[in-house]
Length: 206
Ligand SMILES: C[S@@+](CC[C@H](N)C(=O)[O-])C[C@H]1O[C@@H](n2cnc3c(N)ncnc32)[C@H](O)[C@@H]1O
Image (cartoon, rainbow, N blue to C red):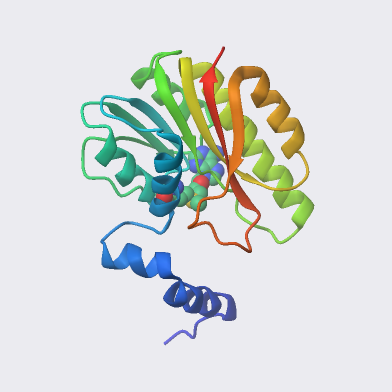
């Protein structure tokens, strides 16, 4: 049998100790990420019935399942190159947001300026080279802002995963030019040692 690498073992140990990972397992949720969105939703009242939502970086599907449970009668399009666990009513697109064929598939499902909410939990593969990883993460945050500009209706909202570091101030300034209010929030389920925070932007002004 193949032995486990040190980093896989560390990840597994951390998952076993993590209260949110244990809770996700006990409550049959797809991933611990579920609790991050649930917390943001409680604080910012993001989701309600009949909403039309775009989710970027959706695999394995923790957020997808949560959104599905909150928007009965609405529309959810979830995008990721990796498989997304869904129960049936969600439209999934397998691929990277920003690629031409993904754009085409999305445009066939969603009209421009028609959505209430764009969510992005997109994260790059981590190389360990901090400056390069930060640049890739900010590029994904830029893409999420572009998606919001294209697909949100006036007054719509955007939630984006951001890693604290170079480029965040510029990103916030740009977002503040397109929304009435933009704040950074750290959900309780987000690991304290992680630089991860979420930008919550409301009141899209176009
Ligand atoms: C932290 S995970 C998302 C977890 C998910 N929100 C959940 O609740 O299960 C980040 C995801 O972003 C995806 N991703 C990275 N770049 C992307 C892109 N350009 N388009 C779509 N998804 C992307 C990765 O494949 C990965 O599955």
